[in-house]
Amino acid sequence: MIKLLNIEKYYKNKFVKTFILRDINLEIEQGEFISIMGPSGAGKSTLLYILGLLDTPSGGEYYFEDNPVHKFSEKQLSDFHKTKIGFVFQQYHLIDELTVYENLETPLLYQKVKGSERKGRVAEILDRFNIVAKKDLFPNQLSGGQQQLVAVARAIITQPKLILADEPTGNLHSSQGKEIMELMKKLNDEGTTIVQVTHSEANAEYGNRIIQLADGWIEK
Image (cartoon, rainbow, N blue to C red; front, side):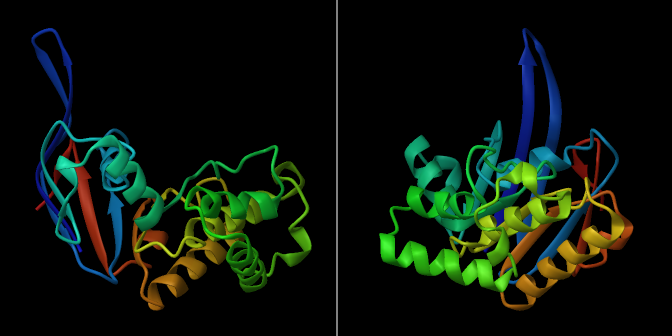
């Protein structure tokens, strides 16, 4: 599904290159659940953002379902991101001025999904996540766990091929965190490919493969 070949990420300051990622070679199969681990500054989030098309590598090749992503234009990257990838952040990234319903509807508006189908998909996901009663509330009226639940629901409403999660339980109590991880596992069991960045050994064990990063390298 995904193939990274010799991916590098660095920042250049006059004659000095500061490397964030070095020589990353990685293959991710459809239906995998991968956990990326490593100390702070290892390049975990940068790798996730490159996978999610929110950042571009300085060198190397990225193939998604055999599409050469590294050759895409800005518009192609944007369209691909909107249709293929769902993102779950530690900070939730819900839109404060929008209700739960409107937050869920927004990605479908970007995809130009017709009104009747939008309503149906939002209703279905509200029901699936047991948050129908919260649909008219704003994010600041929800607990952290409820906000993250909405964030996961928003990530999957577009039916993406890949979900990327950056420390998805980092701001949650242990019981709320467990609920989110069980939900991610269920999504994976249903066929969604998931890649998460985590510091938690317990969360990492939900995946079927753990990748260790250190100083921008994948540890062999």
